[in-house]
Image (cartoon, rainbow, N blue to C red; front, side, top):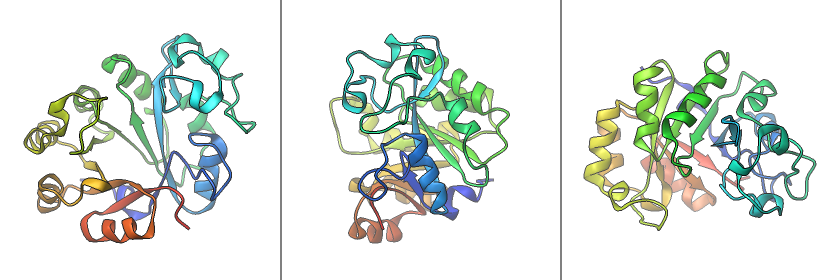
Length: 241
């Protein structure tokens, strides 16, 4: 049974960041701002050099810290001393983030597969969430990551992240509607998180027909929010008042 927290209230994308709050994405300040608004938040995780799940979107540090190198070049201790640009926030582990989160609000964890270590990052995330008392769900573009949770932690709510709009970061099979439907059925997902720019489509219609909740990202305008109301069950948003 799909938990109600997935559709009850919107999720702030990478926390409540940007002009609306003045906070940096994937920062503790942004997550707290989302909770202050009465919303849960979505975050991204990658692997550190010492194999821990850290809260950060890009493999490279440059965009959000101004520093060279990649997340995998640094241990969690070293990352904890790197400030996010224009703030006093630092790069935290997933465990640290959850320890400082308000457990009445849900956390949606996108597990990045860009580093090519699906089992390792899945295990690292599970280690940090297995005893977490608040509502939490995991999701990923990468089926192998979702499959790890299906096999090893089926009690954790899991979802597939998807789009039909091709880019250079993912192989062609990620964008096939037929493949996406086959994948979500094979993985017995609790929800799907679909690109708002690609809605509606046969994948999300299949999900709604089969009572698989559809979340959508990233909703940045009122026009897109209205589109989401018509075709999905919940939004992952930025900069919406």
